[in-house]
Image (cartoon, rainbow, N blue to C red; front, top):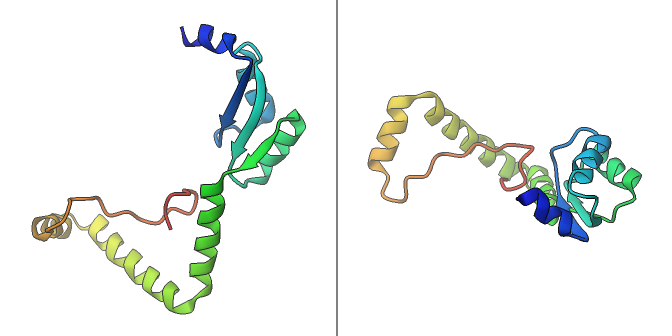
Length: 127
């Protein structure tokens, strides 16, 4: 059903960060009935950028990813903030490693019971 709907499209915009070769993406798109790719949005990885250029598609870099890189670089450039970030990471790591500590933290927490998030350098939604 989805395949039939995709075949009806004349234009499509893509957002991707999952392929390792532009030939594979071309193969996937061809199964959709080869609609015109109006734009493809990717992160700033050079292999993806080169692949998009080879395909001749319009290309935009992901604004959220670019903004995250700017913020991360800015925070890393300020020594005082780097120290605070390292201390916060150590605290989060402690609660990830120790079940009893994590349970006590949740027990004493008065706010929403969110999981503790560790910084992930490849994710664009965390700093």
